[in-house]
Length: 268
Image (cartoon, rainbow, N blue to C red; front, side, top):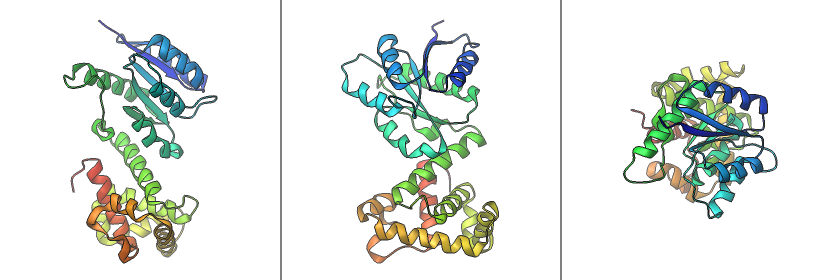
């Protein structure tokens, strides 16, 4: 039986060694090495040409994005599958990683068993495809548990918040983000924004529904005053006309929630 060769690249050596030890219990996986920074990872990728590279985005000397960027400019016969490791606060880098060829990302902390499952699925998909020698995988396509689904929802909402341009330092950023997440999970919450959604967000952040509403309003006003009309049109299409003025809290939450649900292929 052919084994899936895997390279681990993470500057947390203790974590990487534990992950290596865990993976090596599976007969179909062979960890060929552990790289502690991006430069070492780049060298090992070129030399070993592993089937799968588990690459941390944030590393010293050369980060995960830098590794992908350098590989994209080099004449290397390489068909490795790249899985990026990221933390919640690093989600702004995920889209760049995907544009550089990463097939999947997984958020720390994660279940090592889920990572092994993803490696097998991506490997099988790649080598059973008759149409391409490089697989483009929709991240939402592998959601098979509530925990995994929640992770992806959080990432998608955070990415959308960055695209809209809501300043992360504002209190309204956290409240709006949480409100969108809750309405993606339960669309019925939109029907009772004042009576249900605001109080639920307020309870999570130990504040009042009134402060939640005002902070979200301020965040939306700030985003729309500094936002790019073309960006807003690309995000929301014909749902909202940028030139008519900023949306209400409910409109913004509803539009963002609908967009995430469509992106993730979730039913209405």
